[in-house]
Image (cartoon, rainbow, N blue to C red):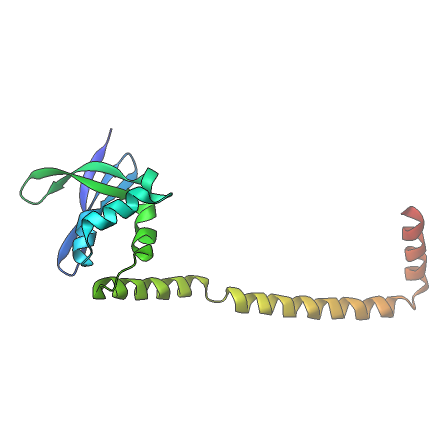
Length: 154
């Protein structure tokens, strides 16, 4: 069982740690709560009660500065960002984080609606061109024969 502990990131001067255990990155909850000025006990209770996060969390041994190992409540990295984004709090730090999340989501999805509009416009243009060609082909006797053969085949 391969595992290593690495500095996750530094946020507002606080190190957030994670544990890489068999390819899964487990992120400690308490340091995140401290950085975002959140009550850890309340967040832990909310995580345990959550239908998605409850089954996902685990207590993992984490090496903290000073060579002390402590068991910490962790979530896999894939759930961390959604958990933080779902927290209800007026914490200035959390509001700042959520603002960044909204921007990232916008940047990711922006263009989906405008691209769809563009695609529908292109489709309408193609249908119009195809219709014009079909009308022009109807005056061609070979095309009329082709249509009759196709109808007979059906």
